[in-house]
Image: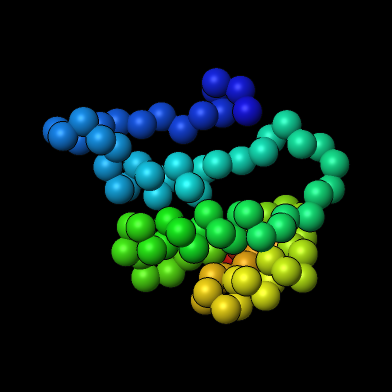
Amino acid sequence: MSEDDMPHYRSDEAGTASKRDIRHHLLAETRRDIRQMTVLGVEAIQQAVAAKAYYHASACAVVTTSYFTRQAKKLARVNDCTLIDRDRLALWIVAFQSRS
């Protein structure tokens, strides 16, 4: 990830990143340098579930332009984490474009 791709943080008065910025970072984290198809494993799910618990979020999701392993799907199901793979993402994009 290049420096231009990194999300920018602002600090609250205590000197820590605000929850809004951290949520933005979790959503903005990308792998723009990967050009080939990869399959997401349990690590991405573990990170999302841990962030959900840490920030007392009501939901969590992992979105990818790829697919998930069977183990990742199982872990997500057990932890109530929504998974959006490339097929579902493509459907969302088509539906959004048809509304415009």
